[in-house]
Length: 94
Image 1 (cartoon, helix red, strand yellow):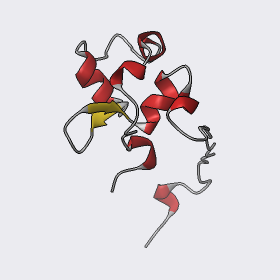
Image 2 (cartoon, helix red, strand yellow):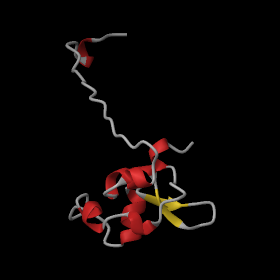
Image 3 (tube, one colour):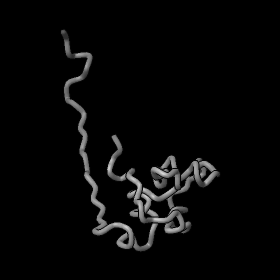
């Protein structure tokens, strides 16, 4: 199963990705090879013809005008709060 954000955007060329925007996500541990780095981030992938193209994630993160390639681009996020159980594992008996 391919997640929505990893789907290829068929009408988006690789040149749509802005090097300046993509550079923001690089760290000192990032792969130096651009293609490997962008694949690991799921920013690019191959279409059915084997052509490298941006993914939905790539268009949203790496283009100045994602509306050119996606009909109604939007980003949302979830905040998941975790908590520590007050009962320690050592106190639980089976």
